[in-house]
Length: 483
Image (cartoon, rainbow, N blue to C red; front, side, top):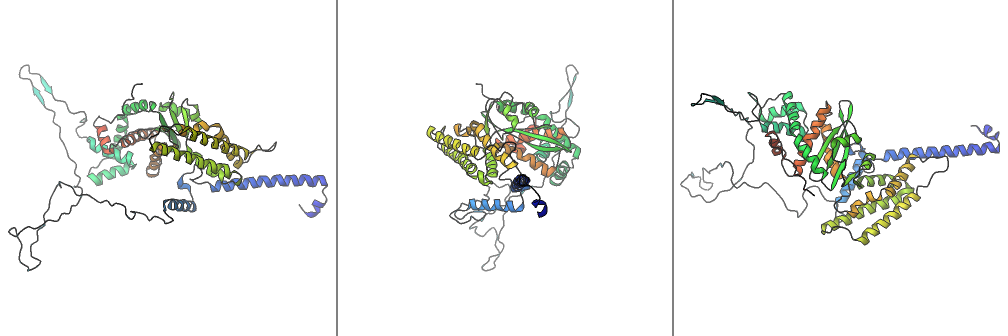
């Protein structure tokens, strides 16, 4: 608009123009702030994975970790610290083979040395190595004998795992399943590894069939695991995406520190919860990340404070929200420290006065958060930044019992890190082996991973657990105690 055009406007038209310009300026400022906030999001203040952090942010987080490790203002160097005890390979008491080395010539006069010369000492060194792997072929012969009394011929039976003229034994199958499910090696490379490591040229079809057999054999284990999980006082639940071809697949986890159940589903929603069969009717505590679906459960709730801390860090980047958001973040961590201290001292709960003090400070900070997010003028809506901060303050007000449950029950943890750790192999598998070719492939991966994660938590080596599985004797979770 030119100066001449402005000069021709009436006072009312000028006022109307100024109002529109102010509104446009406010709208553009909100959009700029929203874009800046989006650019500022990283794995530390949002749900973005660390893999999507820019290089600058990764370096900032690395520097923060280095500063946290420093003591007395001096940065700790990587590796063993001065004064810390060392550890090295220990000598075996009974080596499998002893090789002696005799001196043949005196280092003083040059005379020859032999068995008749006095032995005055022996130094020992040991080398740990692996023998060259060599498949062992065992032939089973089932004989038939004719009875001398009646003439009836009776044939002996083969063992249960000897089903074909030539087949692979339980340990071979266990190693194949280990490469696939524990190390996430693709089928083709697993077949290659068996040839390179053990001289067994197994076809990719056989490798795939072994994986499918492992999942089939775990039907009883999964059923027993569902029953046991339903009896536990606290469960961690989470979900993440995977791919079946070009379609999305959802991996759901229900777990605690001793047991893991992973379930592959085509949906993220309530149907998946019903498929898993653990949470319907469950009355214990469910630790989760505020996904709306979980509020349908009749269980008690603990909202993951790690997610809340990230949300608070994101909101605190706005100057008008910093005080209450940072205050709540510090309070959540302070409460958790107090809970850790109480558990370390063998206490069953925090002191009532301490809980009342924490609760009152919580309410004050939430009130400050609500006050920092007043209702917008009539006819206007909150911009994205304002919505984020307002919704978070309302969530802290609405879900106080589910946010602070860990303060009242020391059995409950502050975060859902357990569930996220148990789902991490899903992402690892995706990076190494890419997507699944079928939903059935995703389901068998979830089944075998459930078994390996659970047995590992119970100190059973993966190969031992898988060998037992193919021997028809899988490790089984204990039955819940009757009430």
